[in-house]
Each structure stands twice: as C-alpha cells, then as structure tokens.
Image (cartoon, rainbow over all chains, first blue to last red; front, side, top):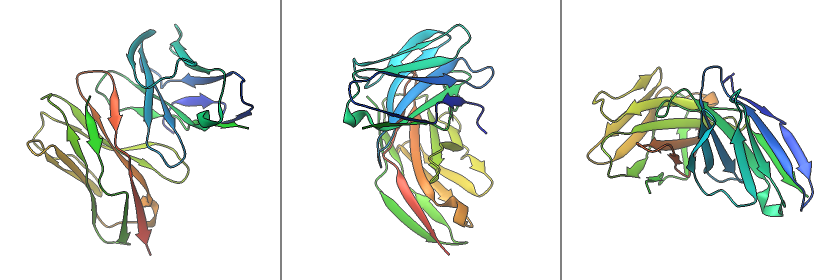
Amino acid sequence: DSGVTQTPKHLITATGQRVTLRCSPRSGDLSVYWYQQSLDQGLQFLIQYYNGEERAKGNILERFSAQQFPDLHSELNLSSLELGDSALYFCASSALPGKAQHFGDGTRLSIL
Amino acid sequence: AQTVTQSQPEMSVQEAETVTLSCTYDTSESDYYLFWYKQPPSRQMILVIRQEAYKQQNATENRFSVNFQKAAKSFSLKISDSQLGDAAMYFCAYKGTGNQFYFGTGTSLTVIP
C-alpha cells in the first residue's frame, strides 16, 4: 500500500461529458503529480502541485484542469471528453521535490 | 527537455537467472535523480530503486541493483535470481532540478519458469 488514494477506481462515461478524479496523497507529502497512461503506453506527465500551488505543467490539454486543496488532496477535471481520453490516470505524491514518487492505484477511465 | 530512452521494448529471463534492463538519458544538469519503477499486470506503479547523481556508489535493494554511469548517462537495472513475480513492465525515470519527472517508454520483462 503506497498510501496514495485515488477515487474512483473505474469510471465509464460518454463522449462530451465531464468527470472529476480525486487523489489523496500520502500523509505528509506536499507534492502531487498527475499522469496519463494510455493502453500499452508510457506515462505522460500532466501537471504537478506543491502545497496548493501549480509547479510544473506537462502535456495537459486545455480541456483538462487540476487543483490542490488546502488539505492537500487534489482533483483532476476532464471535460468535453473524447474517445482518446480513455486511459489510466495516475496520481503520485512525494514529500519534497526530488524524493521518490509514490503512486496511487490509478483511475481507469473508459469513454464510450 | 530531458529525454529518457529504454531501447529494449521486451526482455525475457529464465527463473533464477540474472537480467539487465538498459536506460539512457539526456541532460545537461549535474544534479539529478534516477528511478526504476515496476508496473505488474495489476497496473500499480511500484518504486524499485532510486539513485542520486552525486552519489558514486550504485544503489542496491535486495535482488535489484543499478549500474550508474554518469559520464555515459546510463542507468541500467540488474535483477538477480529472477522470480516469477518480477514479470512486469519496468520504467526508468529522471528528475532534475525542475519539478517534472521524465519516464522512459518501458521494458516488458517476461520471466520463464
């Protein structure tokens, strides 16, 4: 158990819809990272927050947004969903930049 | 941007044998961190080992060890006494002075009984 909690584990929705993925980092970790992993692909970095502030942005689409709340949990919002957004979305947390990331079990998003 | 290259999409090893997975990276930074992550069929991402670039000594975690060659920008993972449970996708990752982690495309390891 990594200590990082992601909900929901599975999400099935239709094109054009909007979903919110939630992540609770390990106790004490201030950094949260979001990744997208499409089928048989590597991890694509989306965005990182540190103690509530955005710190790094990767290949995140404009239809996607995220935030980290004062209690350090984070949400990734995906809107106007397309078939190509079907993927496994991981959240990871770390205590400090440079420390190892610990990953949640992921949210599997399926767009029908 | 930094790049991480895993040139072996697939590898296989006999149970109890040793296998080495390759990883190279491109960076102009001198201070950085390198990681190996394991992703079994359950799709969880599990940290295997971590190396700090300023440390000359290669990191070791039980049956897992790395060969870190800073000048060559190479960071290979050696798995000794391979077990069936080692079968997974292995990802090499780099983190420099920025906040972003860069992952390779992965190597799928099969362990043959």
